[in-house]
Image (cartoon, rainbow, N blue to C red; front, side):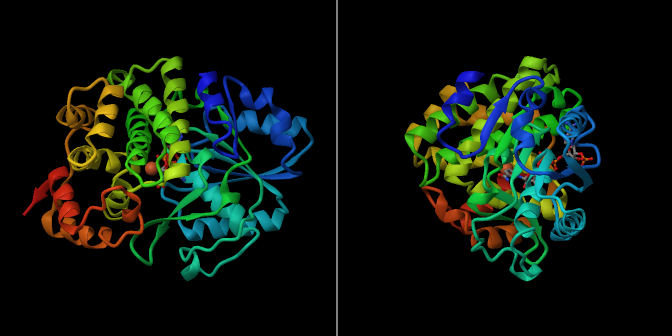
Length: 373
Ligand code: NAP
Ligand code: FE
């Protein structure tokens, strides 16, 4: 895996440290961030050895710490505000995020709002200054790649969707990738997060910002994730398989740090907001249709993706995803058409090389679900 970690060193400012016991073995990287850590996590995200490892390094290094373990999936502004108030009360000067995308994204928003506040209604207006408290991130799912991106995705109750906020300062200073923390991760979260990483890599390749360098990394991630499809399906993942998925997810994160995401993520957010469909699953249900749309216009890139996945055609790609994701959700035509109207206005759309219109989006939604009349 070392060669993959080396391949992204110049591409993101985050220092990625990888391997068993990497936190303990690189304690100085954590200890140099400040004097008092706010540890940001969820109820069970850090109950896998990760919190114990972080605390023992902080205690041995003579640092103070406070644990905020109230981040829920799809973090809200209210959750971020609660943590910022605690951070100020205890005088924390750096953040350690432990968890999947939800705690990692909440941590980025906390690190930002600790030094530049916004009114609730202005949180999604953009224009963040390039400053935030320093952060270390410890991913405990292998999917979002948030440990190497400058984005924090929060629930946006104003527009009834999820929206990202961003600034260069939201790149964590250091990311510790230790696959041991994922050994007890359940099947559904393991599958859904792997599919999220796959969608980052595939979407990234069809953006206007993609480059030969990001495509190479994306294809590497696609190959690694598809090589684990059988193990994901049967939920027979060895230590080595978990490591592979964790590194692939980080690589796909590096891709979207450069390219951003596009139509699949834009279409997935209302499904999470209104139907509570996990982020990665929502993407996975839509990804086959996206590839079909892109295949007609960028057959060369589509062929590269299929080769990396060891698949014959786009139909096989959809079948492989369906086999992992199982029965599709029932959603009414009316609802899907309403989402399509909103998604057609998404700022993510112009980022894709071929910008889908309302009809394309509507069709993708209708093909991706069991449509109730
Ligand atoms: P998540 O919401 O962080 O976690 C899903 C569930 O897994 C939670 O219930 C959590 O439990 C549990 N969990 C996490 N790690 C565990 C472990 N090692 N063992 C046992 N349980 C564990 O899910 P996610 O898919 O990683 O993140 C999704 C979020 O990331 C979405 O909000 C999405 O929009 C965002 N995202 C961000 C980026 C980015 O670049 N910033 C990219 C893609 C997606 P507890 O809640 O009990 O702790
Ligand atoms: Fe994602």
